[in-house]
Length: 372
Image 1: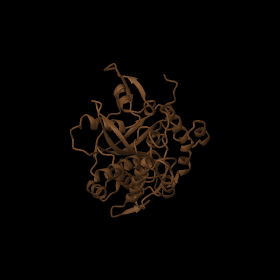
Image 2: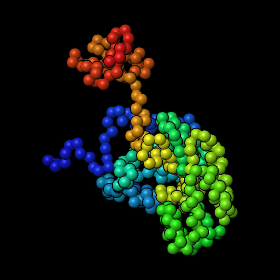
Image 3: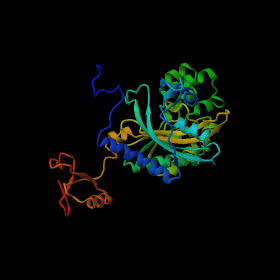
Image 4: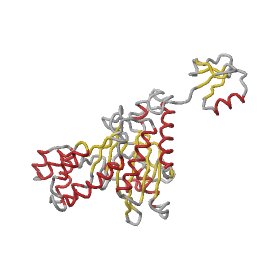
């Protein structure tokens, strides 16, 4: 006998019960429907892969999230995916390597991490999104962000906001207009992530301090950044940001934090976080990156991932269908007709079945639907 209570689950894992489980399926379906309408074809990678292959496609921050185990069949170490994006990259660079570019792929499924965070203690999450592989242009970024906004809107989200970042900015500036030795770049990046001007001074990187103050609403942030030295690096990136903002229009509030890198370690020139009213923390993120091929070659890509759990937690996707109780003796044709009209029918199987106890909103009287 086990000493673990039958209803107890490991820390960070949970059951989704009605109506949340149905809401999860509804939200996933809406993301897939929106991406499919934009030409993104769905792929479904496995929950686990060989550890060596998965680690090779994850940056160090993600590799630390791997939950590993030994496969009794192959006797090799497998790992459960903490993120689906890397798997989509594997599919694009192997099984679909000869498909025309740009390649548009969509996905949805569960991911599992070794541990959660203080803000998001859940270790298992539902992730859905899309990847455009073969391009990382401004136009590709506009398409990706637009599709993400449309998917969030289809799920019922409101007051969408986007925080843009330029993940490779410090590295680019360090090579030219704001020279840094290679051993200082990472420390400067960490200091900027923490908005620590004193640490920048200690590193002899005072020239980077204005980047901290530049963060904020898009237009004011861009204006501040255009006044800084290093426009050979900053200028083209800011031009791209303004084109992205114009492409998004008024569908979301846009802010810019030019040096935010936490969670964007594998992004290249553009990254973005997505937020919606009522949800705790970000509900999605994305940006440009590179897909590594087996021969060592790389190709550009841009994509986004949405995390469905915080959206479920604020009640999205729970509209559901009205449940109508069918008393004993109701003709099968009646049930078929009601289901075709969008009802969820709950048929009585015994005389003791009760509409209210079975969670029905209506009862079929034989002639019409009567509200319970």
